[in-house]
Image (cartoon, rainbow, N blue to C red; front, side, top):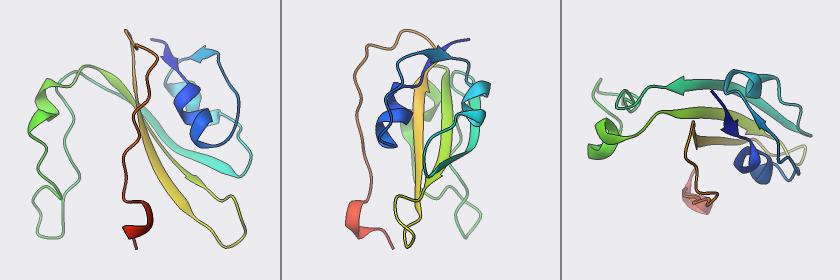
Length: 109
């Protein structure tokens, strides 16, 4: 299975346009960035992380309709006093080349 690395590289300020397997993204070498996990999630198999009470941390009604994707997690440290955790979901096939970012921005503590 092939996935695009463009979104991961874009988040980390690198220029990469080659396709690679999801598993190979774990060994991707990016400046000041570590990929901590890269795994294929089967279609309809995504389950949100559990919250403190043991239930889902957040409701995600569309989880069962997601196509197969490569879930990439990592940490970027662009400066000595930073620690930015990120997650990117890359389609395994049929990517239209568009990227949509979402997050907490400055609200996350």
